Length: 103
Image (cartoon, rainbow, N blue to C red):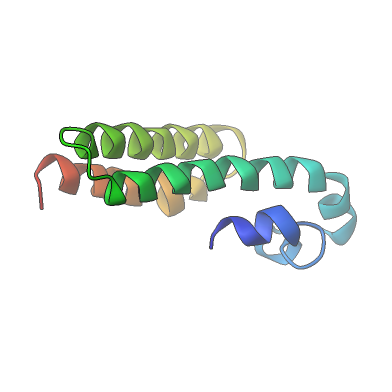
């Protein structure tokens, strides 16, 4: 689950992946936990979009939550690390394209 590192291990094990020292990870642990919670809500929304049986709700849910992931990825690329654009926003954009084309 993608939120586990951010939510529970932020200051313990994740800092090398983000190029942070242990002190930096400790100082930003609260922010990382918040980010993990936000990502958890996005993941829950995408799971909901795949499991709902309500007619006419699947596509709008997928569009909304994939759009949120794209916006978050673009914002992260502009404010934190450019690689987020390729790691988060680009795959979400491809998924949204597949949804729109009904692939």
